[in-house]
Amino acid sequence: MWYMIIFAIGIIIGSVTSNILHLKNHIGTLRMDNSDPDGTYLFLELSKDIKSFNKKKRVVLTVRDKNYISQK
Image: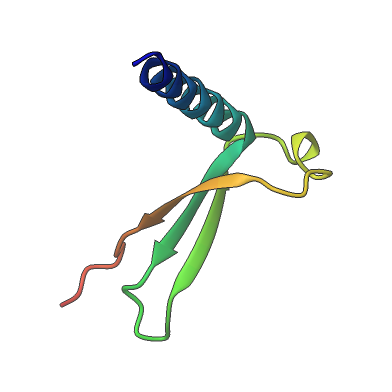
């Protein structure tokens, strides 16, 4: 019984730590626009200054896939 409680506490601590690290490395949004017939356009919207992450090997982006031009 104690092993299950310790295991559950470990999972909770691990998931909280993982979420904190992801929020720390989050730098912005990658916006995808599929509405143009020429192909997909990608836009990078940064929420932090470039100097704060230019030396990092990994960053986290939120991906937003939306058609911004209406189809007629």
